[in-house]
Image (cartoon, rainbow, N blue to C red; front, side, top):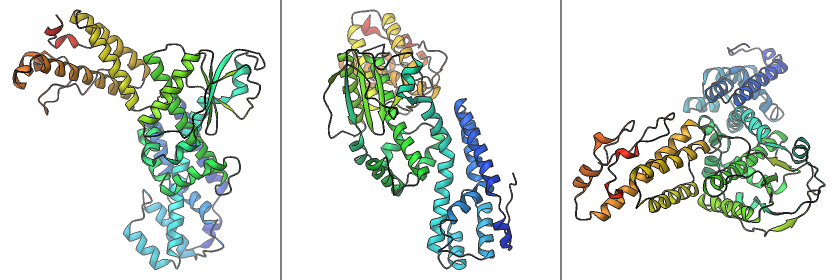
Length: 454
């Protein structure tokens, strides 16, 4: 594909652009991004996204698609078209700088319309760059409910005894802040800035309004509707996935009997174990509250004997069988769960040896690190666990030896040379781990002098 596009005064250059070839090139880049997503090569995904956004050929293709919508209202001569083509090749990030805006005012009679076209081109490029990854996640985690039962050789008409409840999350999005929405969609830190650019205030409002008319959207084009629906699906998926993780880490170990299916913003959760289903709903609502969200209405539980009423439009959310790397940080609810486990462990270990405490701490650490199977997330989990242990020790020692000075407590119980951590921070005067060795889960907690446990 030709990478250099220069200004040309011949109008035939514009008319003779081979849209089919450019469309094929765009599809090829999207396919490569999708393949990199399957390989979970985030570095390759980011590199391909940068190629797509910064490619002059792709920019020209986006410009032609957008400009065709205004060709009856905006008439440009050969020189003006040539300037815009040159602009796409010159400006690496398509940023409307002061110079470019001044040139637009000078060269074009309808400068506001041209600026709007440039903004739409930028949004279209961002949409093209993130679309393949969203397609990958949707293909990975959402299959038809009927297809799911067909693959698992389960007869949907069989009569069984179970419980279920439904949630309509539509009202949730009307109180949702854009930053909260983006943080939940932090699938890749590398594309976060693209999401911020694409879901600007105007786009976010359209997204919220589109929830009230998912079937027939007159205000949205089909491509925007598809992408918006995927954003909603992935947002709900992250909430359900974290709910599953917290219940696994806190109370239950087997969730094979709990099924979550969704259609748009509607969730249907059913389970043979009523207590487990009740805990799932409460944990899900707690996660919403921890994110500053709440639902208007929460329906009660009911018995269910068959799934005949579930049609092919409902999708099975497959977040139980695979680790999706969707959650990039511990939510407030996750921190509460982990802190409560540590607190219970300390209370149970007061009269026992420090070595037994070390074993139990490492067992919790290993379990949580396996729940978050990405190295970056392991680092956050392990560091947070260390920090909780450190704060608990510090608080306990200060209470027992209230007459001691901070210097004396630090000298006796927190000697720097006794720590086996990778690195130490001295800013606060207290040692604290900041880096974690991902391959050595068994930590050296015994290097802290736990004399009060002996």
